[in-house]
Each structure stands twice: as structure tokens, then as C-alpha cells.
Image 1 (cartoon, one colour):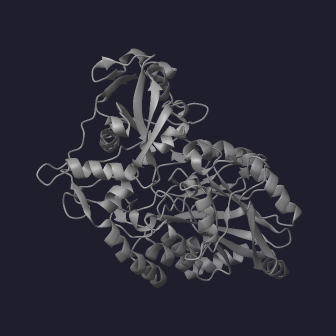
Image 2 (cartoon, one colour):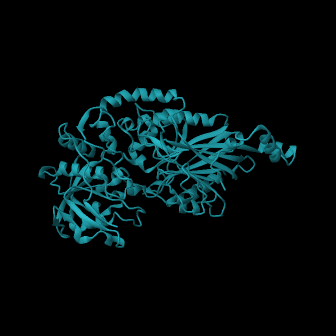
Image 3 (cartoon, helix red, strand yellow):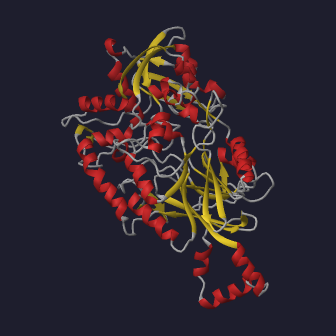
Length: 575
């Protein structure tokens, strides 16, 4: 079983006499044996982050629960310092990541196409990362620019790995599949990087045309064998797919900072249990969860699986013994811990310089007030529920496209995952909504699209909110005012969406009637496995979704009559 505590921290906690006793016990074989072990084995350290999402600024909204209290956490200035302190005294150390380092970023990074984040990670010492789904938000050509740079931007100093991202015509990877870290002195570790197989279902199709995302287990097995043929026996997978800790004992020996999980669930469980035993460690992400778990490999041997929450608020430290004779990690030696990135350390000067360079420029661009709100307008606790901010965005898109010359829309839908931040009353000057705040709510630069759907197709799309073979979770579409229906959870399967309950302004939706429906271009392409929307015809593209939202807030969020959070209940949920 792995331990979540670092070994040397545990040793430091004992007194000098106890330490001496421990040393004697460990070295009890013979002086010669101990000397051989010292030459043959070295201490290896991996530091890991995931799902950073461009959160370089130590904003007041970034917190993490410690002993039941939410404390300020994260920010590149402090993450860099924590990582540097963790590396002290470690000869064989590397810093890695498991994707979504960019994309869905706050305004400070997103307005500059996430270049500030890449510069920050370069300075922070990140040496390798897998891609995640959000690395494809702006399309594969833009990801290539992020990696390689251009005349004004140096690009990433570290390799972005995508072993399972292939050209669908040739089957060849379009990104480096793996990277070998040669520490010197006979110590080398191979890193295979992948995004989740379902990436193609959750990013805009226009940006990934010609790409295919392959099975994670099969891909890892293929490249693990290739690494072994090259003499690399120590293998780590950086995978942008994850799970979550659960209270039930699932036999996976999980530990988390808040003590909430002893077991594990989610897609990563099956992946970890079936992935090639040549892989020694899995560093994961995507679910924004925090865990250090032991999941048996196909041979029944324990194997560490980790994740470090999100937004740079936590980092993972993995310590292991590397056997120079075998060139492999000693599985029984592996320990892991997650550490909260508190702000009680000195700010890193290089990171401060980056913030000082971009901060004023971002403030100038994003500081203008676009409208006023009367209260907090928030997301839901999950993506499986109706929430006020989603309703507001749907209303904004309907209003923006209702006129005949801009779409003639009657209904609007918004995907819950596209709402990335709350719109808060007291975030800056009380009641003022700035462009930066509005942008952070919808940072993906999708277009507003109005298209024809029949009533039958609308029903099918609503049924596709439920889990299916293409998506394991429920996604609750946010709907515009005037459109209502009933979701009866006492029923099973797609019958939960009550077919004869669909109404538009109190009139039944007719299965064979055509309606003009607005959504963002991600949904219109069938994103998040809403395939019915991709069948829509007579498409009319409008402005960017964030611009439509801005226009709505400006129009209806005045000083005299600020916007209020829409009331819930457009969807009647029967539990």
C-alpha cells in the first residue's frame, strides 16, 4: 500500500534517537550490502500539476479547504515557490503535468491567447505535459502555435505529448507520443502523454478536423513496449482523464487532503486496472479532483494514481526509488502526497515579473464596465442541474438572435460546461460587471448559431442529456425563458424526459414542426455528445457568444435597474 506522506517528512518527525534506531534497522544486513544499495539505488522525485487553466493570478476567488476552512490558495507566484522548495536537495527531480494547462482561462491569460500561462510554466520549470481537451479549444493549428511559437512568442519550452491524438488518414500521432527524461548517471524515465479518448466529443469539431483520439489503454501499451525496446523500463503515464475519491472502500487505497475518500470511482479506475503493467505510475487530471490512490495493475501489483485538484491550488509530490541495475522504479518504494499551494511563502520574482507585464494591459482591456447586476448570478454545484447563470446566458442568446434578420430564434440552449465562472456582485466595484468578468464566464470564443430543428429533434437532444455510451455523466442543458418541460426521474431511460411536456410559451412543441433554435457553435457541432444538434439545418452564424452576453448585460443591466438572477423552474424536475 502506498502512503500519502512523504517518507522524509515522516522521518523528520521523529527524534534523533529514534532516527538513529531507524537507520540501524534499515542497514541491518551488512556494511557491504548497504554500500552496494547506495550505489545501485537513487531517490527519484516527480512533482505534478493538472488542470491549471491559465490561473496565473492569485485571485481572491481561488481557495482550498484546509481543516474545514477555505484558505487562499494558488497563483503562479506561490506555486513556483512551493515547487522550488520541494525540489531542494533532490538530485533526480522533474516537474510534469497532465493537461488542461491552458484553455477556459481567466481573462488575464485568455485575452493574450494563453501566452502568459505558457511563459509562466516555462519559468516554473515544467518539463513535460500531456495535452488535455482544453488544449484544443482554439483548434489544433493554434495548439501547434502554442507549442512551437511564432515571431512574437517563443512557445512552450516543454514537450506537449499526445500519444493517442492521431491523423485519421494515416493513424500516425500528430504530437510527440512520449518523452524520455535522462537525469544522467544511468537514470532515465519515459513519459507517455495522452488526453481522454472522448476529447472529440467535448471540443468544437471545426478545430479538430482530421484528428482521431484513440483508446488510452491500447495506446499506452503500444508505447510502453516501444520505450522498453529503447531500454527505458521506468515509465510514467501523464493522462488527462481521471476519477474521484469516494467514501466507499473500493479496494483502491485512496487518500485525500480532506479525508473524504478511501475508494475511487470514475473512468480512470478501469483504465488503471487494465493498462500495461510496464507502466509504473499514472498522473491524471480532467475531473478536478484531488487524490493519491493505489490501483492494482493487471498483474495485481499496486500502482500509484494521482491527481492534484485544479487551478494550481494543489501539487503532487511522488517519491520513489530508482534501481540502476534494472533501470526501473521499485514499486514498493513509491510514496505520494498532495500539498495545498498556500500563500504564506515568498512570491517568486520571475512570476511576479510576468504578472507585472501583462496585468496592466489586461486591466486596460477588461476593466470597462459593461453593465450592472443586483446580486450574485451563479453556476450550479454540478453540471446536472438548472442554474441561474445558465438561464441568463440562454436568455441572452435568444434575445441576440430573435429578430428575423439575425436568426428568428424561438428557443436557446446553453451547455453547462461552457459556463466557467460565477458573475459576482462584489467581485470588483459592487454591482458592476466588467468585460473581464463577463469574458471569464464564457472564455471559449464560440459563435452564436441559429438553426432549424424539428420538435422531434429537440426532444432527442433533451434525451441526450442523460448518460449514454458516449458520455458517462448527466449534462443539464440550460434553457431560455418561455421553453419548459418536465424531467421525471422516477421513470427510466429516455422516458425521463416527458415527451408531451415540451412547451414553448405555453403551447405544446409539435414533433413535426420546425423551430429556430440558438446555441453556441460547440453545441451546434454536436459537442458534449448532443448529436441531435449537429443535424440542424439552415444555419446562420452570429457574433461571438461573449459579445452577445455583453450586449445583453449592457441592454438590461442598467444602474437604475440592474440584472437579477433568473428564477429557476423552467424545467420541472420530479424526483
